[in-house]
Image: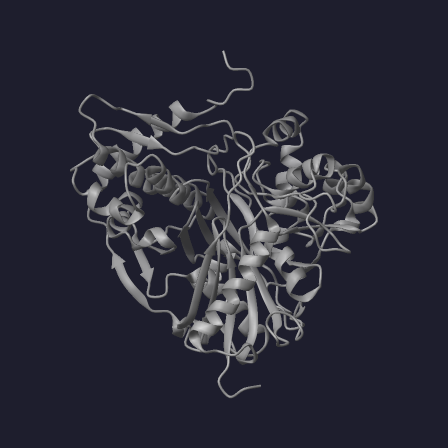
Length: 513
């Protein structure tokens, strides 16, 4: 092993792929990013090309290492973090996908989820998986692919063969972490956090659930092996004859939101973080106890280290936050996301305009897959700055929706919320978030905490870091935002938000009038 070693992290997200290299102090030494195409074959459908994602992954790894002058042999380990729930089926022999990946945002299986509820299956699924049955999760996506896979190229598996071959283990299933690990190492592996997002995994027994596999008709032979998030045995190594030219252990994996929890060093029960990406995901560590939510939250696995018990978390999944800023850009209300802060400050208020960005339905705590995006309260005097400000405010209100549910479920009053993701560079949003939730917001120095969490998991597995206490010492705060709005005013604005949400519910009816 070379004298100077580092840890690499692949951060495969909804809109692109990043590779970062960290040193022992958790500082970034290399960083490369590449976007990939978004496919919308029908309204409410979202797909990615898994091959494009893999090619982007190899590209950013090679470019980041080259730009930083780091040799692949200097990597002590690689960790993987990924957009969760996004589902891939591929041919075990050729490695070719049998269809584009179905993305977590995709709503094509909403009817199936509603049928589950009508059949009285909701409580059973929630009890076993900790999840609220929704098209968001992988189970109905796998089911759909097994029935409808449309090969991306003629030489790939024919649709009629997919289920039959899956039963023989010749067609494999995985979330994006498993797809990348397979391409990196040749091993068919996922970690407990990603398994917990499939709606097929029993989070209490830590095993694929036979009843759920039968319900969704998913063959066991196509499922990956489930391993700890930080695995001393490692998932495998890269091929020294492959694109890296070195044998590097792949030793850690977490779904992106759990990776951010780990990267924010939320190792103790009661520690909480919110990541602002395409969506926002608010997680609170609940320790070794899986707390069943009574307020519309998810119970999920936070992380697991080798030889240690699983740490659970409560999660509030908000489907659209950063994507709402992208929408402002799409409709040319802004030229780039960085403008939102200055434009929002041009108005003292939204003038009672509210934006409910339910473009792909509403997640926690509402769970309405048929809700749709809504703007209410507009008058002839409504200007661009009101809509931009209202869009930013919607992010803060949705976070309060989850914060209130989380405090009710956990009986823990939050005094601090650790935040990360691209949107937290916006000081206006961070201050607004502190005001609306009435809590201190902590923004870290290294805001790419998702990649950092994957690096920490991999590095701990191979002994690059000895223990989690050393990781806490790495954490540096860029800025703290203290609540400054009168609580009564925050409550008034938030109550009006609840009125706006009601207008968005159940808009995409099965049979429009």
